Length: 343
Image (cartoon, rainbow, N blue to C red; front, side, top):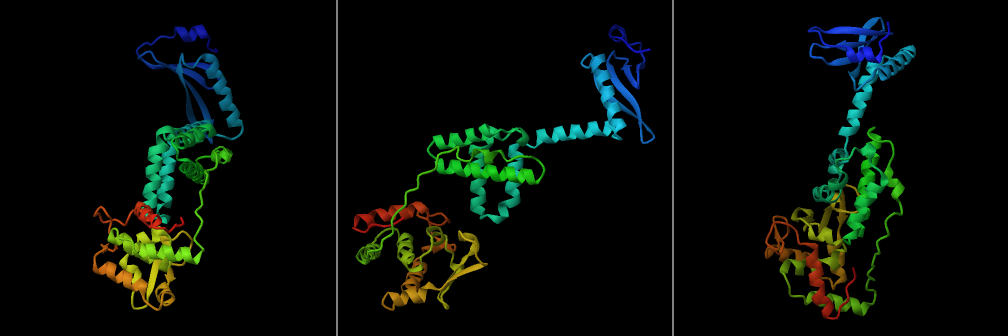
């Protein structure tokens, strides 16, 4: 005989566990403690199985019957309702556990070998400071575009518009990784294209007038500042490399016997073979009256100790390369001397 709401309500514990059947395999188990739980007995692949629907009164008789019919519909399709429930529960748990921060750290760990050590640390530090505190604990599947934009706007509001764009790029790469690993289905960052204003870039015109170039070179030659900075300034117009490549130069990259400087590809901005060979010393020496200015500058810098522990020694006396700000500081007296520098 099917159960009724009143009958279920009046069922009491009697010191033993007992069952009360409603039909179609659905029954209510009453425990000695007085608790009540809905269960469904069914057969799948020739085996007897039991599926729990939850406790009474949280799950009413009506809801329990609806769950029974849903289970019977799955059985009619050849699907085990018990296994289906386990898979749905695991998927729900995975969604909750796969937070944005967890996926971001997984992405970072996956690709950090492709970056320089310094760049990898900078990326993680920026995310820890500006992104994780706001959206790190949110499951990546539940994030919405406005939440990502809010993070970028916070960064832009403090005057770091360029980094705000960079933060969106990081988030976009993290979402693409999440999609590839089955942890997300849509890259919501792609919907934010054009949502941030474009950063205004100020370009510095290069010097093309021979007389102005001459004034610049004379100003560099007359610069009397921190010795490693002096050496770097004098070497810069001889090798034509980026400031960062010059600042971080290591002694083991130079071969004086061949007049070569080999810059590791990981320190270059473009994709290169394992080594980028730059045999500038001889050719540039011939250009400047046949003197070997580049080798002379390097040898003096090494002799007087501006290269310590294989790098340009920092002004602060720490075993790190010269800071980029030293180049800006050195440019001021040079500019004041009548030479306008570019970039």
